[in-house]
Length: 361
Image (cartoon, rainbow, N blue to C red; front, side, top):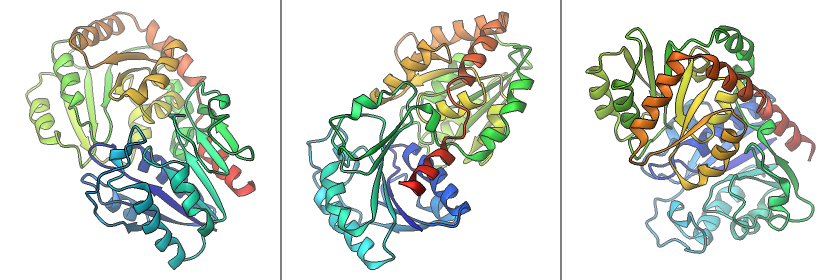
């Protein structure tokens, strides 16, 4: 079986769409399929990382065309939907007919999907906005608490809906390390803080977090691990700031063992995106920083479930983060409570559920 993915990463888009597609593609390859990624070469794209994982990558033309303003995220495409569809159609027609075309892009909707239908057997859409129509056979929204009714008028009647964090697509090592992660955090002690604000972190929230932690009430032996992407524009500045902090801080770039890092951390300060499901699968308590409006829904649902705390990058950010850290340092009961709630969100086996659904649809 051949599967084609249409997704992008950039300084504006971030890396989350590509990373979750990579997780699904890796699962397909483990079961004998082949995968091709079609991407536009935006600044901050992950074509090299996709290729390094063993998948074919086809880059579209670098365009600077005026986007179709009909969609809220249209500017992320770098072309009109018609232009993008025409380029993708030529790629599909030149190779092996795909069993599935997987689309994960906020700037694409039913217009694009309908234009590509003739060249593929089936279309899958990955979405978490429920803000536009899709012409698909299967739609995945891995947001915790997402009601399938949100898509009732947005997809064809025959489309199969996979909704909820049960289907969160995580790499196998998260499920494998789940029991280890649960066992090591039973005492609720705060000794190791993991900071991960996404692969790009355009607003430099990472440094805002480190500035707050530098003035927080933390034992001097508390370790801080910072994870950033290789395309993060503030990487050098963060490294310089971390080097002069009194607390031991390690800045890691482009890590391949995020599951291990999360399992060995006591508390995380992270983006309210796809990594939220990774943290939940390991029972890692977290303060989620909402970096984009589209992250608000999932963040609110996780906060309501007691699985995480939520922070906005407003004027009170430093004071609120310091207060959270001081409270957790004094009493580990809240850490244990959040961990137990997070574990109920997802078990980390969603990728296999999704792959199996594509194989049977």
